[in-house]
Length: 378
Image (tube, rainbow, N blue to C red):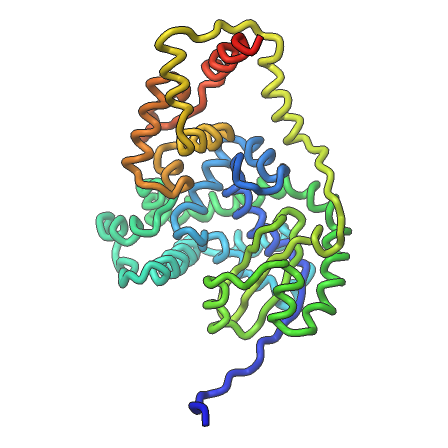
């Protein structure tokens, strides 16, 4: 006879179409949307079209709570978007809720998110009880990914800045980029949610496989131990990926609306027009080809997979070194060597600012290299 164990209630599985939850997913996707990521073209184009300030907000607020990007979940889940009376909540409703919160509550959101990241790492660090900057830095540094530790400390020790930047990110992304896109895809999302309801009634295991087309990831399976409710939400831009929020007792899983409805999404976007305009300024330009050692140095710099990935990352806009480290997932010393070689070859430009080095792609130099190769093809 098998071992006796304490039984647990079966998971309650449902579906929902929630704009606040969709914003959490879209922000995390935009954070990762760099060329070569395999993400939806709308995401890559939109990230490239963000202002410098908005991109800095996006990267900072997603870059200090581990690889699972916990922080932006906290203020949205505090809004309780799955409550019955919030079923049709708008971004205005979410912003109104956040604006009514005290700044110290945003620090509490950040601490909960950092604590979650520490649990993932198996550390035993806890948030300091006073304003000692050295203790806060010790608490924060193990969970940093692409954010600068000094900027994160400023947010934690001055939570009014954390509140302002959190609300600004959500509001500006919605107003300037995502609202029109959401409105254009809302019909598809509603259709997908309706189809998903009947699938969800079969139970979690079958629903996950049928809605996402994927096996259950190990990190998500671990979250089932603390969940009592599972909600499947359609996404217009998730593609082949799986995205989820583990927030006991809630587990929110996003699935691709296009895969479920068979809809083909065509992108005719301002962001893409911006991209095309940016590239067109080089068409018809006369550039001098590289020769001699300059040409050889540039070719050698391009001859490495990680250096090519760095150029792809910088194609979306300038980044500081720690951001590049977080996105490549390789040692900081290796990234520094790659950046030095790209800089020597003139393929990236470096600008010291606020105590950090910001790197940007040298488009003119790349076009000179391209012209050198095209000459030989002619």
